[in-house]
Structure formats: C-alpha cells, structure tokens
Image: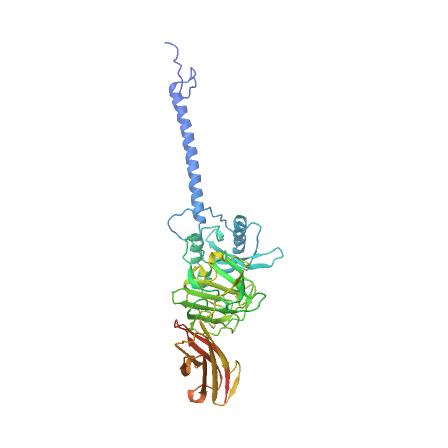
Length: 455
C-alpha cells in the first residue's frame, strides 16, 4: 500500500499520518459545538437581563416603549431608602450642586411618596422648589422609587395614577402630574397682572420642576400683603378662605386659601395663598378688571407672602371650601400673555407694574366699614368713578345666604338712598352691604362693606 495521503483541513493545519480526514471533521464539529454553547449562554444571559429589566419596570402593562434613558431601579427594604436612592440619581443627573432635603414618607400599604425640598447650604428652603418621589413595593422583591425626569413622564404618571385615593386624591395627582409631551401651547390672552394698577410686584418664582406655567408674585414686596385683583372679567366659581395655616414646607400643600374665576372665553384663573377672611367676593359673582378678590398671604405651602397665579383649561372636583386642609387643582395649565408682558418675557427677580384698572369702579361713602347702626333706617351713599353712561348701579345687601337688591337703579355718579331695614326684612345682625355696578361691557362687580344693625 502506498504512503498515507497528507491533506490540509480548511484551517490550513496539516493532518498527521495517524490522523484521518474523518478525525479532522470530528475536530471541526467540536469547535462548532463550543461556539453553539457560547451563543446559547450569551442568548440566555441577554434573555435573563431583559426579563430582569421588565420585572423592574413600575408602569402598568402597555405596549413596549423604550425609555429615553434607562431607569436606574433597585430594590430596597423600605420606602425611605428607595426614595433617597431615587433622589440621589435625580441630583446626579439634573441638579448637580443643588441640595435637597427629604421630607417624611407618606405611606399606604405598598404605596408611598415623599417630597424633597431644595435647601441652601444652611439648610433653609430655597423658595417653593421641590420634587415628589414615588415609591411602590413589588411582591417578593422590595421597594422601588421614581423621581421626575429620571424616568419618562409617562412612566412617572402611570405609577402616580395607580396610587390609591386614600394616599393621593384626585387633586394631589393633578398637582404632581408631569407634562408628557412638549407641545407649544397657545397662551391665554386678555389678562392683566393680578394686582392694583400702578403698583409693583416682584416675580419670585416661575416655571419650577413641579409648577410649569405658574408664577409667584410678591405684591409691593417686603410682605406688604397687597390686594389681589381679577386678571380678566369673569365669574367666581370657587372660594376658600377657611384656612389659617401655612408653612414653607410641601407638606402644607392643601391648606391654601384661594379664588378661582372662570372667564367668558372659557379658561380659569387661580389665585392661591390668600390671607384668611380677606376674600370679599362670592361664588357666582361677576368680576371685572381690577376687582379686588382678596389679599396675598401665606396660607398653605408658601415661603413668604405672595400670590400664586396660574390659568387652566379645567379643574379637578371642587372640594368643600369649609375644609381648611383640602383644595381643588388646575388641569391643563397654560401660560398667560398678560397685557403688560408676555409669559416668555417674565423673568424671576424682576419687578412689574400692573395696568389692571377697572373701566368703572365706585366708592362706598356711608355707612363706613364696621359701623354699628342704631334704628331701622340707614342712609346709604356711594360714588361711581369712571364711565358715566352706566347701565345701572345700585345697593345690595347680603343675608340669609343670598344677595338682596336695595333701592332703585342709578345711572349717575352719585347714589343716595334711605333704606328701611325692618321693612326689608333684614336681621338685627352683622350684614354685608355692597355697591353693585355694571360697566359698558356688562361686567358686574360688587364693592362690599360690612355693617352691624342694632335695633
């Protein structure tokens, strides 16, 4: 027999005399088996990683949506630890150099949230700047937490909506909800800065993390407690002035006194932190430019005397105004281009002068505020300032949960009427009198004064 044939395998390695071509094929198969095992191991690792990521997602089941950035979630033994970790990630990614103080965790079962308020180097609050951290306990794993912007807005809102109402009611969810789509909104127009014409206010805060398209104005400055005016003609739809509490802490949220006005063009304007007992208007009352609707204060979550202003397309369910601890909240918050300055032109720390004056107003001459009147007949006197061609002006009085017209309509600037309180059925008790007048546009306003009838 001849000498064995020496062949080269596909790899070019010479096969020895004792190694057959079949043995070379078997060696090649061994390599293939090794590569196959490596691929299966890699695929298994990838699958397990994908499953682990899916297990850590907090959103309810929905079509797969890749996050803009991976959400760094890890399980913790309690909600506070989870919230602290989420806060650390937020600071590292979006707030380097800023300090936040984590507040008390509010928990109900497997759900919890906590506010983290921004503070300075001395630990003092930096205005009303905060973020809300949401936490949930997954069965068999632990607590996870989300911070705004770290997770997508859709993921954050989905978790928020799953919170039980015993922990977060409709108003709180609207308050914390993140805008999901960056849409260029058409600003509301026809509004004027919400304080008396000719006076100034400082813009102390605008468009913060949780308060997009919202602004804080300190009227006159130095806690002067300036009068707040309607920014546009409309009808008062909500009044709360039962709260006497406030603090520079997010946990005080809900204790705000406020007025909400619906305008003839459909939008709502909101005025928060009003001083207790300072609201002279009633639900259902028509107001105009320059109508005083309250005095700025510190009720609710307020770091100093100011009025919090915003406008919206809608609202949550109106709450009980006699409950000092609850309030409704705006939905569809939208920027406002004021007659004096557009929204984009508002700059924190700047001073603005209002041009919010009514086309017509009045002065209640007598009786003076707080007067105690003896006898049955009261002399009512007032003056109208502004337009002279009034549709009407007359006196009204409030008792028995309703307004009563007192005397005839006047069209001139001077009003005077002797009112027989006994004949009108007015009680011998404190009542509110007001000068009610209408301008050429048909906007009705009341200028009230309180008197005491003593028979």
